[in-house]
Amino acid sequence: MTSILTYTFRNLPSTSKWTLRFCVRPLSCSSQLRAGPAVQTKSKKTLAKPNVRNVVVVDGVRIPFLLSGTSYKELMPHDLARAALLGLLHRTNVPKEVVDYITFGTVIQEVKTSNVAREAALGAGFSDKTPAHTVTMACISSNQAMTTAVGLIASGQSDVVVAGGVELMSDVPIRHSRKMRKMMLDLNKAKTLGQRLSLLSKFRLNFLSPELPAVAEFSTSETMGHAADRMAASFAVSRQEQDEYALRSHSLAKKAQDEGLLSDVVPFKVPGKDTVSKDNGVRPSSLEQMAKLKPAFIKPYGTVTAANSSFLTDGASAMLIMSEDKALAMGYKPKAYLRDFVYVSQDPKDQLLLGPTYATPKVLEKAGLTMNDIDVFEFHEAFAGQILANFKALDSDWFAQNYMGRKTKVGSLPLEKFNTWGGSLSLGHPFGATGCRLVITAANRLRKEGGQYALVAACAAGGQGHGMIVETYPK
Image 1: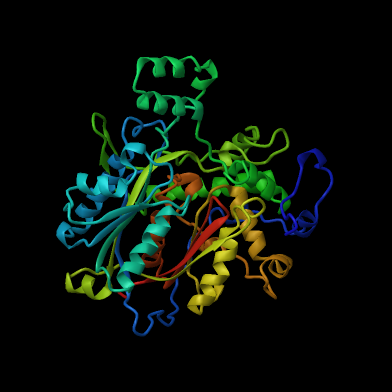
Image 2: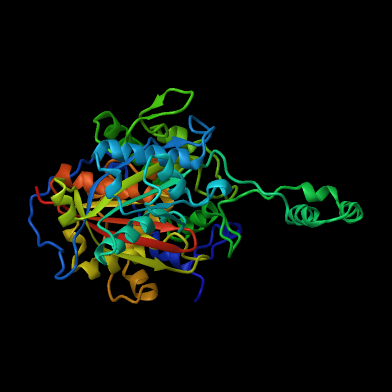
């Protein structure tokens, strides 16, 4: 496929065919920063399907999402996941013995607790008879955990599943070089002193160079931030538009915090430290201050900066998912139904962060809905440029016809319905935990705003993406 994001900043004055297509459609968020959610009053059909069990979210929680290197830095991933599980148990009072299965998402695994779901479950006091597994799918890892739960319940294998996700960016595994690892393994197998001395004679100082983790694509060796910068350029998303959108995210998150709308956050008493009770990355600034920051990835002409990107975050989330009949039998009033969902995948070089654009029409068509039917949109914000590029792609006939095999565009996303309680840019993005935050926020917004349907979508490394329809539970 012809490269759709090939753009070099050495030739900045020239314009690509993408840039020519999109530069005439400026997308500014400044007029929408103070827009409040519209109260929904329309009644629509339900998405229940005959002979398929209804799957519901009883509730969901998360411990505060914190900037890496702050209050969680001395802990391990299973500590955070355990705290989320305990918070869920406290919030729902679900008996541990009725939970049939536990599944968690994570991205950068701690070697000692690679199946973090199992270790966290044992630490939280769940029975050792309750199976648990961990899944990874980059930034949609907890989305995968949730849909795994949906599959287990819809197929009749389980009635009660806990799904969640965790990430601890404060302490990521750093490996010895491969040469050093090989020497250490060979030394461990050596049986005589002569064999050990022979191996040690081959040692070189460069063996000590560590292998540092990087948020980069294995297949392309490109960092996600670099790809976001190229994509913003190709869709003609300006630096000012990105800063405006990031400011919107932080402003709305601060407002939601102050008004107590982020009810999914549960306090966490950090061992040896104080109790944390709110996300600490919400920091509304000013466009003037944001404009002073230098490009973070492509220098000197890039537009992606620390201020319009999501930051490295520590955190964990957990959700109680049940069959509807089981939830009602136990006396619960569910928050929402989990309905249709899709996973999509594109070229990781040129369409790395366009997952929401491809997932949105597919999940809408699968559910028999249109954009106008959606009352709440909750999309993952990896970068402001990524969100705005997806906006432009969704609202482009040219992109739909040339790259999506569609006759017409999907449609524009109304900002008054979009991420109105903040997003990953402001609340934080623990890779493995964000999906659950998106879904429980969507469910809480539907109840608060009187809507019926929410669309949750996210991009992920590898050029993948996820979309899901959430339907509010009738009051």
